[in-house]
Structures are given as structure tokens and as C-alpha cells.
Image 1 (tube, rainbow, N blue to C red):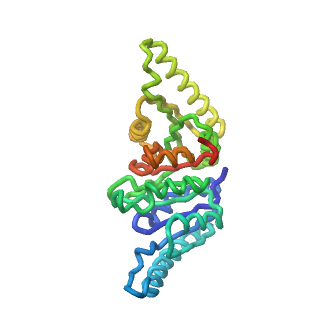
Image 2: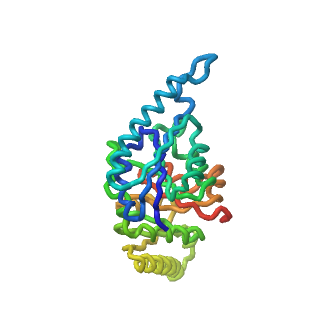
Image 3: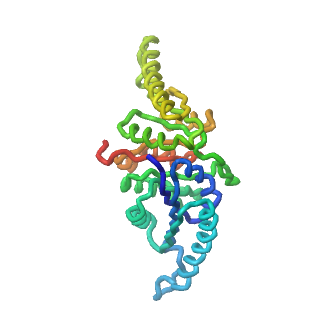
Length: 294
């Protein structure tokens, strides 16, 4: 699967042109079209009692965004990319879904807010809502550093955490489409401690060897597709172990699967994909599974 069109959703505070630059390696995966979307939240437009939203303020915000997009587009045109833009005063998720339906992107890029849980702009519940309502992969972009340094090779060394769900097959095909972009991929599976409670050491090692064999087979499949892959078996809490592995292997991003079930469970107990996308310092690529998968 190629990534030909990317929807880049920005409010400018966290996602600027340097973020786009770090994604341009996707041209080697077929990227030839970038669509910008700036959703101006209604609360950002000044209010006047009895008059609702001030038209002048709305026009100013739209034109300010338009100036930024024109500047970005000029650079992308020179690189041979087609560019489109939407600037709307609206509600974030419905507007993203409207543009997704019209443009049919292969990837949605959204920012991650650093303003606290009550003021998050794009992460958290918005990501969960997008996963629930679209099959398009979502990249939650993060700068990873307080000084907002953008990683030069965002796809250079990703970590893919698999739980052997059916959606994993879709993710592998998506990863294969990135073979000209990925430098090396680390693939891990986290064995829950409950699976290792046997007092027999041989039984414990049998579990490890079984999981390692599955990972080796998956790495072989990717190697055949032209992607250098390395397998890892971890034990413990999935969220903590994925974060640990990402740090140990200096991952450039974390790739995770998600499903309708994860989106629904998140409302009650949280999900690994949602929590990592929300709390991890690493950029996260979330690839939804089939909507019928539970």
C-alpha cells in the first residue's frame, strides 16, 4: 500500500513546516499530494454579546492561516508535490472527517498538545474518536524534545508492537509500503506475566521460544520485502514495556494497531494504543483494524 496523499491537520502551535519536512521522505513511498487543514475552533473567535462571532476576527484568522499555507505550498510545489488546503471555523473531528471523505487520504497527521489533559487540542479523546470513525492510519506527531527539535528521519527506525491480532496483517502490508522509507524496524511482542506463572522453567522458556519464532517469521517476511527487521520479546505490562523498548532501541516512532474495541474500552479502562499515543514522548502511528474486529 502506497501513501500517495497525506492530510496534515495543524493549529500551527505544534505543527509547522519543519514537521512537514520530516515527513517528506514519504515521497519515496509514493507521496505526491499534501492537503493542509486548519480548523479554527469557534471558541478561538472573539465573541460579542448579542452579535455572536465577529466576522472581522474570523476573516483575520482565516487569512493568517492562508498566508502560512501559501508559503508552505510554494516550497512543496518546488519539490513536485500537489498541494491543497482547507481553512474552516468549525468543530475539529467533524471537519477532519468531512475532508477525509472528500480527499480520501492515505495518512492523517495530527499534532499532540503539551497543554495538559483538560486543554489537549488533538490527542486523547480526539484520536480515539478518529480511530472509531475512520479507517485511515493516524500519525500523532510529537517533537520528542522540549526544544521542539524535529527528528530528521521520522521513519528511520520505527518500533512495531504486535499483539498478534488480525489487524496486524493490515499493519504489515502498510509497513511493506514504506520499504523505501524505513531504515530498520524493530518488532516486539509483550508476553503478559500471567502467561509465565508455571513453576517449570522449561515451560517458561517454551513460551518465549514460541513467541520469538513468530517474530522471526514476521521479520523474515519483511526482509523478503526489502526491510531490515529485528525481533524482540518482552515480558510485563504492554504499555510500560513498549515505552521501554522504544527508549532502548532509540525508536524514531512507535507503530501500533487499534480497533473499534480499543476505542470503546478506552472510555472505561483505557487502551494501550490510546495511552501511548497520548502520553509517550515518541511519535505514534496508529493503524486501525477492521471495524468488525472485536
